[in-house]
Length: 302
Image 1: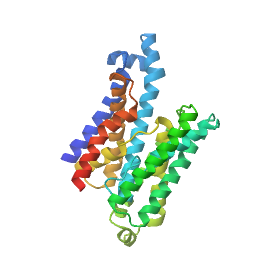
Image 2: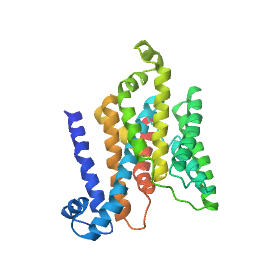
Image 3: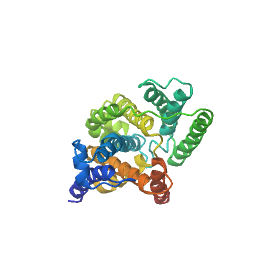
Image 4: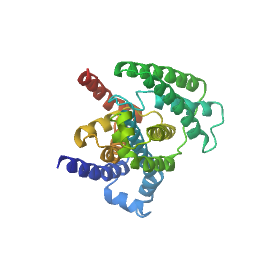
């Protein structure tokens, strides 16, 4: 009963958050005006606001949230570590450094160069984390290594940005959708791998092949999301953990639910960036939400 309630709540919250993202901002629009504007009718100003500005931004926000939450689910199962997430392990920072680097060198003008560079940076960071995990890193060591890697990559990003101005292009959304679709059928394999490599092999899972598919897809999702929206932390940590507490560890349910939950959280935080004073970035709002949650998790797992 609880699982059905949570699922239906997510199904209801996602369209509600999407509509709120279209309606709320510096100019608040009634839902009737939003509906008219989506069909290209009504006040021309409302049509321009909704179709040219808010609709693309809302689609990006939903895709980014779904990608980061799905990547967080995979990483937590892959490393069998509740604290694993794209942001904390440095994957997002690696993608950001790759993206801003091509912009700094003046080769990021083509549509594909920024996502490709973000993918390269994310894979380099993922490789470092995987090597550490194979050496049997404990939770504390893995977390501290992720923090150190984040600091190093963020310093590189700050150095590049201090010398060169650039802006990430809005691209990669179709690829995010494809990667999410390819990840969904792997829920059963994730269940078995989370039990341990030997148990999964005894149940007929090609562990090596599945693990590489999971690493590639989760890293791609993080890289593409970062190339579109920049570093957005804690979505991949908060959403999977909370939904695992409500829905249980079955990844066949957890993956689609986390994609919806990540989209809801990102859209809600994006609305907050418009309503709160100071012009805060999306990553700042998600950090304000996720930071206290992370500290609570550290205390709980200690």
